[in-house]
Length: 443
Ligand code: MN
Image 1 (cartoon, protein in one colour):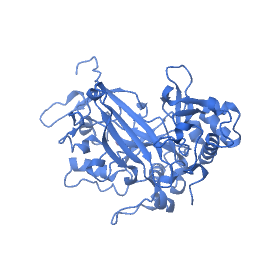
Image 2: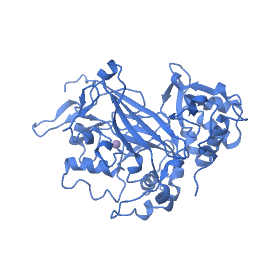
Image 3: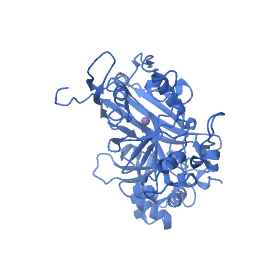
Image 4: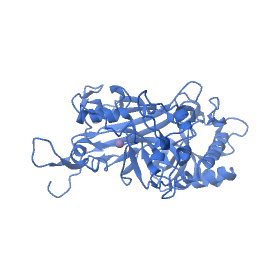
């Protein structure tokens, strides 16, 4: 099965000149979707497609009369403030729109068709969440993260026996998912250390990041119906960057027996751009289990998943402190890893989530879980990078960080590159920490 088509041709160039520059996240072969409007305006949010440093306005495109058929229907769905209706349409509609966008944005005889007037500079835009997110489920698909975290709590038995059999996840909080760029207050909650009798109530002292990918559900499934592996990817619209901010001290006290609660529900940041599964096709890699590990059970297995169910997406985390910002020093890299190290694939997450009849809906969000790679410099959370807070990170200006401080800004980045394919990127997912907002009642 070839998943590649004319829209992936690495030789394609766009009449939007910035899309052709080396290292650009948004060349013609990418075409990711966001919800946007002009900064500081009262315009309605609507869907847009990134091309170079510009956004092609889907509402303006749908009104232009230059598309027909399935592509026009998809553009009309994408013209709404959130992308749920477009997500609900499914792969044939997404693919028809992608081909029409690719042809309309290419250099050549059909070039432009008046589309120049449909562009808005990304510099002038602000972004909303890509979808109205009904439900958010966070998985735990990095065996390295699970092992690193487990080792901090259970040195003799780091990985629980269920891990290699069942994709672990929990139902998260959708209402506090925020778009990239939005700052949030340091969370408050209960913490308890062995030296005190009564738990302390106050701002978290162990605020952390989790570098994850966010997976947007496309067409849903009816309650009571499961989605088999062979169809699982048809239910996935695309992938973005996700920072699952975590208060480790709150988590340690509250997580037994039902899992994280206030440690995770205060903010989750999402990047604006959703890269489609079709755009990611050149970067598929085989899904393989290490020798000696159990093979996935039949409901989590397919030939396609084994051949090409994983994705080689490069991922990085950059940190900037308030002092760095004041001195005009840019974000410093602290982590680099790849999604190819995940133990469970996107298709397996969908198949497992629904096997008991749970209904997914268009615009639902799945988190991949913290995507730590096999070595310590690929660890995707501070709790791992600092080995439980014992070994602070050194920053280029001489500061150190064990946990996040007020004023810190964290940027996630993602991109795909390989010989014979055009490099594509995910843009940025940025969030920053405001001081805790102390409630008026005594604590
Ligand atoms: Mn998480």
